[in-house]
Amino acid sequence: MDTIALKNIKFHYPGSDDIFSGLNFSLTAGIRAGITGSNGSGKSTLLKIISGLIKPQAGSVELFGNEMKEEKDFSRFRTKIGYLFQNPDDQILFPEVEEDISFGPLNQGKNRIETGEIVTEVIKEFGLKSLKKRNTFKLSGGEKHLVALAGIAAMKPDIILLDEPFEWLDGHHLQIVLDYLSKVDSFILISQDVQLLKRLCAEGEIYVLEKGLLKKEKGEGHVF
Ligand SMILES: Nc1ncnc2c1ncn2[C@@H]1O[C@H](COP(=O)(O)OP(=O)(O)OP(=O)(O)O)[C@@H](O)[C@H]1O
Ligand SMILES: [Mg+2]
Image 1 (cartoon, rainbow, N blue to C red):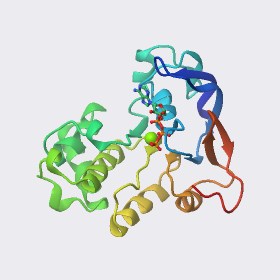
Image 2: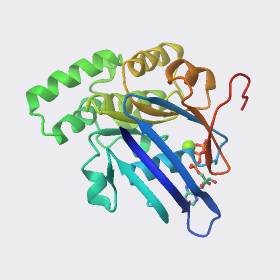
Image 3: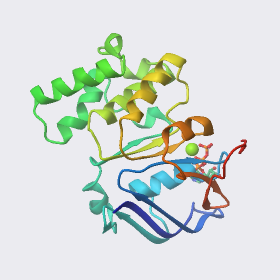
Image 4: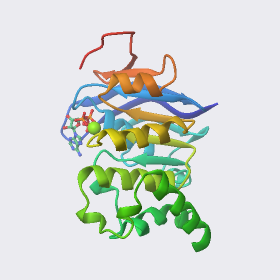
């Protein structure tokens, strides 16, 4: 089954040229796909269209077999599809790390005790114990990215959309994120690091976004 299907998507920002003028893409359940491409090619825009943050001028977005027509359709799936924004400042909502990570499970209807257990587990997994009570707005770029990803992990989504999750991470924290992603069944991962995409994504599921189309990445030596 396709969990995400984009059909004939056309999109341009107001007053700008088309970014997509007939894009098709689908993600089958249990598949990990990777997308790379030049700066400004539309990778982040694509994830915003999938998550309903921006609406294409034409074409359809289907999630779990349902066509998304308006905001309330997308909102039904927000807790099933996690979305790590490229800029963590857009993602973090609360002033304290622990509180921010708790938001997702509480929003899913978990009680305080269940939420506390999940948050403790996620904080341990992402090595965030020392940041638990820290002010989110004063964290470093890498720390913010980790907190944002931990907040998504706490929701245990079916699919994750990841926009450049490796940016700013040191070797130790990169390994933590790689370990986490290796346990996630289904994601769309945007990265400039083709080697990491090859390590994490399914065979034949790495794409290059170029001139508004997703083309399968061909073998070795694609250099950006
Ligand atoms: N809100 C906006 N209004 C107008 N133009 C926009 C807006 N957001 C993005 N763009 C433009 O749309 C194009 C695609 O942007 P997008 O952020 O999707 O690219 P990207 O592939 O994610 O780039 P990067 O690798 O730098 O993250 C760019 O030319 C960008 O300047
Ligand atoms: Mg981007």
